[in-house]
Length: 313
Image 1 (cartoon, rainbow, N blue to C red):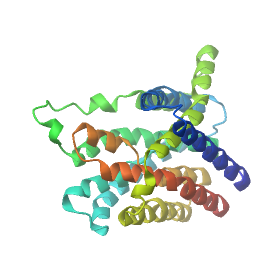
Image 2: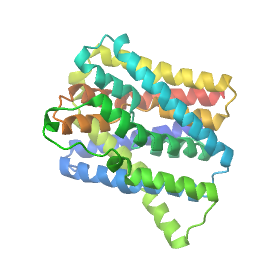
Image 3: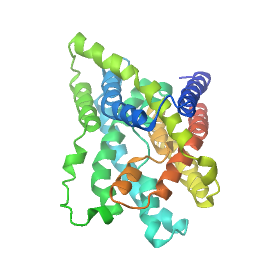
């Protein structure tokens, strides 16, 4: 994809986000509607788009690319786990809040935002890397992530849940199924393939619209003065993705792999840690602030990163 087309696509995404912002301000989308639409995106549309991307016939990657993606995905999260330990100390975060910054470093919005953006602006083969990263996300979050978060007031007296209960979700199931379809070059019946495509096509519009709704509700101007969040953004969403691009380029990885992993490194803080913290009765102010600010800023940082990387590679 040329730099001009990529910038046009990011412009389209910004317009879709603006539509969501406008709909929320006009009270067209209330809290109940946004909650249900978000569930549809996460559990139905996003999984469908993953499979539709594999079935679309535009992917020319082979088995070696999938193996390469799995290795990169494992290394990617291993590095993020280490950064998650180091970052709170660099930012001099209070001991009782370090776990939140740890999670903010590791668990970003690779699915709700990452998948549709990848579909819109990256080469078709890059979806392989995006899918694998999202599989690793689920595996790591419901094991490492929940361990870092620890117990909250709401956990007292509750029976400890089995992490596998959460790892096995529609997104993970469809991602693994899509990789199986890719590996064995399976062909689904046209009626199934067409249905999956139609459902998947709704993902970009719905997810970006809901992103705009989230930004509209965040009262971001009241929280924009948190200096620590801005230092975090520079380190995690700017410097780290740039290092990823430069390192992968030096190591000889192809353009598609580099752009795919770079995008996954540049997406903003995800809302799953915030949701789990709230569920456990913890104060999630830091997480909600980070989600709102990094999501807004990422529309600029992702555009700049992919534009520079595309030109460089």
